[in-house]
Length: 371
Image 1 (cartoon, rainbow, N blue to C red):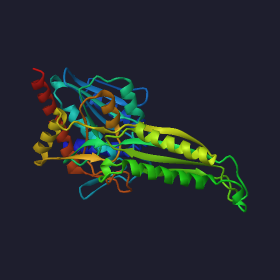
Image 2 (image 1 turned 90 degrees about the vertical axis):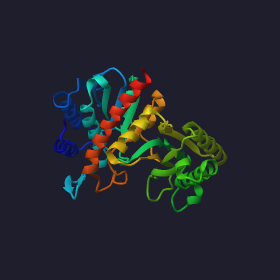
Image 3 (image 1 turned 90 degrees about the horizontal axis):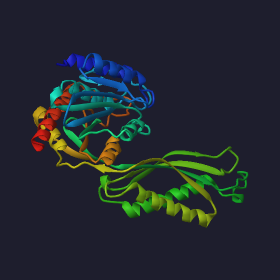
Image 4 (image 1 turned 135 degrees about the vertical axis):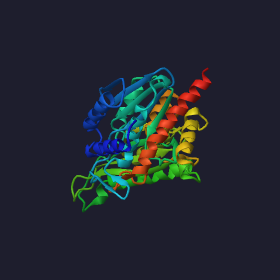
């Protein structure tokens, strides 16, 4: 039986390890050691991209509990104040990660197979979860650990299309005679206005969760303070709701930019940096019902089912494997990535209990359905 003190100390230890994307090794090694030597997993290994994979039990159902080890950059001082534990990753997403690990450690081995995965690079390019897909895991259900709050279940994420648009006007001029050449920064702004106008016209809905959203997240342009810029690059982050595909949005942007480029004699090019389709879970699945029952058991309150505007590993696994998946975990998503990132300690401990009950209910429902 994992004690509350053990659970708190393990989370604190994980927070002392600074793990921005692609620097997760120390935490992977810590979790591997805990899995084998203290938490009763039969197998644990670190795969070729740095994921920690541990298994426990045998038979069916085969349940994946997946959280990410990486955080956004910049440290947050680790401390406990007024019932909250502060630290980078406290909410996003080490509290869900450790909660799942400890819940899995108490799952009876004869009731099914638990696969615990601590993945890398979720805050980057999802290298870890994409590697799980490549290895074609054989699973029946999956829960992804992200801060939803213990009384909420995330059943839907938007897709993400990240594009780098490169604009080259093929010439430059002295800044004192700007009429002699086109200005790539100004032209990119014109392209951006055309893109947003088109996306708003084609995909704007009353609710933000059902609309395509887009923003510029990076811009690089110009070579000198007194030369008109020949080249400019922008990165566009576009979030795509269920019912629309990344390909549809990309095609509409590509056709638009090609048309304007030809009309103006401007050279343009795209680099696709992310192409993750939207995903929505079946809220009537045994997995969702199991989590609902578990939250009722522990919190004495029926949970809300959330459709979020972000994008997560659930999209990748859910679209690839076509199995019931959800995202759930202790923590306040509004605290994530902030300078005072934190998690409520009681909520973290309750999250462990919710995960434990969910595993019980999943195993029970699976065996009833497959008798």
